[in-house]
Structures are given as structure tokens and as C-alpha cells.
Image (tube, rainbow over all chains, first blue to last red; front, top):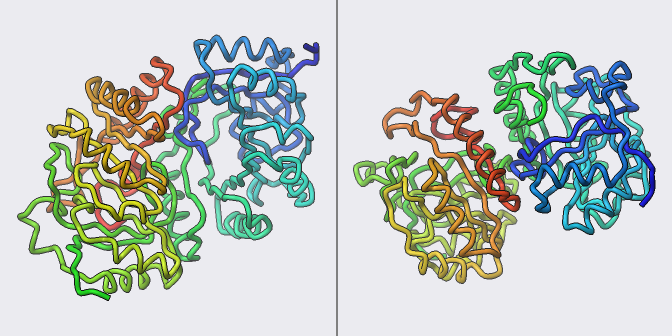
Length: 241
Length: 241
């Protein structure tokens, strides 16, 4: 046991994973604090912006697992590591400790930071950020993340707001033909960090989802999945679900 | 090539599979006409009720594949066989013919009719009907379907309206511990066959979905997926999407 600390923004659940490859799967989320990116449409600024740093708690792997187990009633469950960018945190010990107790781990990261412990994950979700985010993608680093995750199940998840994002997603899929690709319509009504009751434009989200289905069909892009964010439809922008 | 005929209610797509294990996947639907069940909340009565029999077209496997290929632009895609109950149709030749051209096949059936060609499918979705349907389940036949599908990927999909349905789903999962289980909140506003613009009670569906997530968490049922019907949220009760 070490006293290395993980910077934790929030731990909550069980709820279902609302998006991507494990959509619908019961899970406990461990959201870490801090991020090397500043996406224009970030929906988790409370785990990204340094202004919220005093809400982040340094915790040992053991303390995190104790809280996860308390939430799951002591029964092993999928643990979803999210952020912020969880890849900047020291998570190797948490994964090892949880897996020894029967828990399994999926991590969501943009692919900008590479760690050798990626291979210990049960699923690595790489979500490089498209042009609408305002960020630049270093494809060399994404490739290094894929390499570091050899042996675990790795998938790509791309948020799509517009045609430029769609072209980016096509390019990403072509760069990593071995990886399953999940497309997700972007949420243009992300919550401000201090207001988790912010209104969601569901009609706008549905329209973007339909557009994305149409675009995929037009391009005859048949080996892809198009999925919405269920949690946004079900619980709005509310935190902790 | 034989002149055996498949009774076809409709062929449409590409759209995405809106529910279950392949949710979000681009697919062409082949909906067959005729069913041995009469579920109280059936959402496809136009493919079930004999009153609509004159809208069903007897087609050869080759004719079906020609229409599928025309819709997919000649590019192989997932073909979803649905109904009605597609298991009562002669689909072996269609599957063989399509697979030779690179297409792959998932079939949705209630598990009341067993065919030896189930093993040729790429995915077999068994959706035994819970108490709210008004139907009785013959678990022996469901087990025979699982047996017939040895070698293909087989999953259970259970529609849940209420506590009795939830208990039924728990029982189904216990009977087939080797099968992945997908739960789906029931649609209490199914369209009448003659009106595909029937209004959907989205708030009611969302409430049932949240209830189902809560129930799964309460029971610590963590190796299950809870998924809504995306097509209902996105396109209402409209046909052909």
C-alpha cells in the first residue's frame, strides 16, 4: 500500500454508463480533478477548471476503493474512470487493488497523456477532441496510448457537432482501422459548473443525433456505432447520476 | 436458388439499430409478416395482425437481398431480421446468400419457435415476453432456441413495464446465466398500425427508464445492460426509420 494520492473530483453511482461502448452498463464513476485540455464545450468544468481545485480531494487508492465498495454494496461492479483527464493521475494502484477485489475498470481519456498502466485497464476509451473543441490533436500521442493499451480492449469515441468534426472522425477511424468507433452527437448546452440544473436542449440534441445517423448512412459508414448521451436525456445536466 | 418465399412486411434502412446489444449500429431491417404471439403492447401490429396480411409480400431470398443491397448501396451491412416472429419464416437461404456477399445477420425472436438455421445467424436476440404482454413463456422452447443457436452470439432482451416484469427478467437471467441480458423499458404508447404519427409519451418512457436503472442498482444487478429504444425518442412511432 502506498500513500500516493489521486486527485478526486467526485465518486458517484451506481448508475448506468450513459454513452459509448459500455452504454447501459451499471457502473460507479470515479471522476478525477484536473485536465491538460480546455474544450470549448466541456461538460465537466468542475473537474477541469483550477477554480474548482479546492473541491478536489487527494485520496489514496485504498480510500477510493472503500468509497466505491460502499456505493456498490461491496459487490464488484464496473468502475468508470473519468475526468478531467484521468490519465494525469496515478491510477495503477487503484486498478490493481480493485481488480483483486473483482472490480473492473474502464477509463475515458483524450489520448494526450500516455501511461504504461493503460494495459491494466479492462477497457480504454480514447476520445480525441474534434475541431469544435478548439483543441489540437497530437496523433502520435494517441497512437502511443493505443500502443500502451495493447492487450486491453481499446475503442475510439468521437464527439461530433458539425461537418468538420465528422470529417475528423472519419480521419480518426482511418488512422486506427483496428479500433471500434463510437460517434456521439455533441451537447451544445453543457452545464456551467455551479448550476447542475441547467436546461438541456433535448430537441436540438435529437436533431443532431438524426443528422449524424443520416451522415453515417450517406457515407455508407456501416462499421460504426452512433449513440447519444443517455444520462443527459434522462437526468438533464444534473451531477451525480 | 429455390423459389421458397419469405413473407415480408417491410424492408427499410439504413438506419441505426435502436435497441439492445447492437444499439447504434447501422443496419437494414427486414421485417417479416406474421406472428404466433399477440402481445398486449405490440408496437408492430402491422406485421402481426392478419388484418394486414394483404400488405405482406411473398419474396424469394434473392429478391430480399436485392432490395437490401439497393438500400445499402451494395455495401455489406448488418441485416436485422425482425417481425412479427421471423422464426416462423424460411430464412436459411436468405442468411446464406447474404453472408456470401459479406452481409451479416441478427434476428429478434421471442423464443417460441425453434429452427436449426439459428446457428447460421451472427447474432440471435431472444426476447421472451414478460407478464405484462399477456403471453405465457414456454421456457423449454426458449432453451431449445439457445441450443439451436450454439456457435452464434446469443443474448436475452427483456421488456420491462413493472415489478412483475422485472421479477420475470431476474428469473430469465437466472435460467440462462451464460447469456448477456439487456433490459428495455416498455413503450406504453405503441402506435396503432394505421397511424405512424401517434404521439409518444417521452416523459413517461424516461421515467420508466430511470425507475429501471434504480431497480437494477437496488438489486445490485451489475452484469446487465439497461437501454431505451432510441428510435422511439428520435423518430417517435414513425415507421421506416
